Each structure stands twice: as structure tokens, then as C-alpha cells.
Image 1 (cartoon, one colour):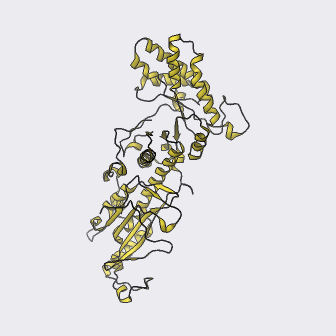
Image 2 (cartoon, rainbow, N blue to C red; image 1 turned 180 degrees about the horizontal axis):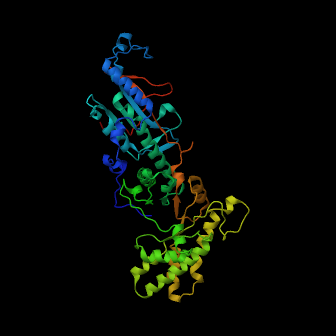
Length: 459
């Protein structure tokens, strides 16, 4: 666990800059050939390229009743110029992410292969309007009222293959960003530890960490808060300058033969002081017992070092927090059973209240000199409670409504959720075609050209 590096994160909507193209490591060679595209896009490109070579003129029957047949016959479908809009329909809003990667895909992969097999980049021929990453878009359920995040105008066959990867980049990043934002709202701005790395392919970590960081910034700006960014892997912070950190795992305690207190003593002795000391206290399914033992040993060392005038060394034994991570099918031994698994098992409000009270009162049971009492009281009261284990928006909302004394939430797989409520799938439609110098609406029934006041012309 660690905070961001530096004062400025490289986020578009917050500093007016876009992520550099090289950060995405686009596989341009295969992207240009349709390796990542749904096969039917390869089909349409092949058809349109053939028609362009044949100088084909439209021979069908059009829905465009206001256009004379002789003018329709002049339409060269192989080189049809279209307006395509990309949008999502998550109610009531989405926090947009993935735009910079979508632009990079367009910049590097728009075009065609010539007769010599060389790729001819035609990005410069496109007209593009786009929002910045970190922008919010609203949706009230009206499909004719979507707010596009990207509009592309140009010869369709030049960029038709790119629809699939663009939609994927937007959908994945926006879903995670919006999920994180909603969790922050539920937590009322308390820090959220970003813990989904183990639940997704490792190649997704950088994208997910970027989306998370956007959400934290978006929440802080919208609500005037100062929530921090905490990631668990270096790759999660790669795109925005974040650095990973962490404390101990259950495996660490096992390596010390189940002695949680000794694990924390050695962690505190060896690790740099800037790494927060957070004790994982559910190893024996006795959060209160392990917490009190860790506290007693760490404070004794802390106090002895203070007495010796070694204040800097003493700070190594300042316990930042404790983390209960009790499994949802187990009841901590310190919690009297009520006979209801929802109330007895896992990290529940009764466990956290009991833990907070035990932490605050621990110093009263210690055999310490009078001059150490106030120091011990402040040392204990400064310990935070970090909860993990099955936390999502619903559970966090319940904890906050009950006023449970949680300081930091660690959230994992729920931030990746893609259900009916969290679906952020993007769609794209051709909504206009250009006939001569006139844009004419052409789209499937139920869709149409829409606008977004945050769209900016960049190309």
C-alpha cells in the first residue's frame, strides 16, 4: 500500500494532458490486420476495398427517400464517408476512461495496406471529437439521449477494423472507474485500497490501476475530498506514476509459525519507516486476541526506544492499523453468536465495534509507568481499522449507515464487477453518411446522432 508519487497525476481531464501513445504498447502490426477485431469487420473491409477498386456505384434501394435515384447511383460505397459515435448506457452516469487508448488505436492503426504490403496511415484524414478521460456522461434510459464520448468522421473502411478494440478499451476502463467512484461515494470519501490484482489477468493491472486513479481524482474534485490512492502492484501505478506498497499476508504469518506479533515485530524492524505497519489479525480467527498481542509487543518496543532517546527508530513501531479479513463462512471467536450467519460471520459491524473498543482501551491493561500512560493512550487511539473481505458498494453503504468505525476499506473483485447494475459496455453506431458535401442521417431504428457538450474537436 502506498500513496501516489508526486503532486500531479497524469490524468487528462485534471491537467489537460493525454497519456502518451507509447504507454499503451499497442500491437499495431496485428491491430492493423484485424487480429483483435470481430471477424465481420474484416468481411466489410474486404468488401469495401473491393468495391473501391471496382469504382462501384450504389445499385440498391435506399431508405433515403429525399435523395433522387440518380444521385444515389453516384454514391461510391467503397469510399463511403461516415460519422460514427461511441457511447455507453450505464444509468445514471459513467466515469469515462479509456479514451486516450482509443485515440492511440486510431492514430496508429487507421489506414490500409497498399499493393506492396506497406501500411498507409490515414489518420490525418479523420475528423474527431472526443471527451477527456475523467469526464462524466449521463444516461436516463433514453437511447436517443446518449452522450457520445467519441465521434469519428471519415472513410469508413480506413477505421472499420478498429471498432472492436476501441469499444473494449472504453468499456473495461470506464466500468472499473465507475465502480470505484461508486465505492468511494458509499465510503463517504474514506480511502479505498485497490485490491483486485489477483482476480484478473496480470496484463490488465495497468489499465485497472489507471481507471482507479481517475476515479479517486474524480471523486475528490466532485465532492471536495482528499481521498488518497493506494495500489498493491507497481503495474497498477505504471500509467500515472503510482507506486505499490503492502504490509503482511497470511503467508507471512505462516512463515513465522503462526506468530502474528513476531511477524509484525520483524516487519517493523526491517522495513523502511514510511511503509505503514498494518497487522493482519484474523490468522487464528481471533481478531481481538491477535490485535492486543501485537499492540502490546509493539508499544513496549516503541516506549523503550523513546526512553533511550531513539525517536526515529521508535517510529518503526508505531502501529498504523489492523486489518481483519475474516472469511464470510467463519465467526470470529470474540463475537458471541446470534445464530444468523449474516450477523455472525465474516467482517461484520459487531466485530469492528468490539475491535475499536479493545484497541482504545488496551493501554489500561498494560503494566507501564505513569509517564507512559498518555503516550500509550495516544498510540492506541491513533491505530486505524482497515477492513477487507467481501466488501462492495452495498456492504460499505451498510457499514457507513450504521456508523461502523472503519477508517479504510480494502476492495477487490467487486471493483471489476460487470452485472446488470454495473454494465458499462460501449456501443458504436454509424449515424450519418456524407453525400457530396451534405451529411445525411443513416442509422438503425431506435438510434440517432446525439451530442455531448464535453466533446472537443482534436483532429
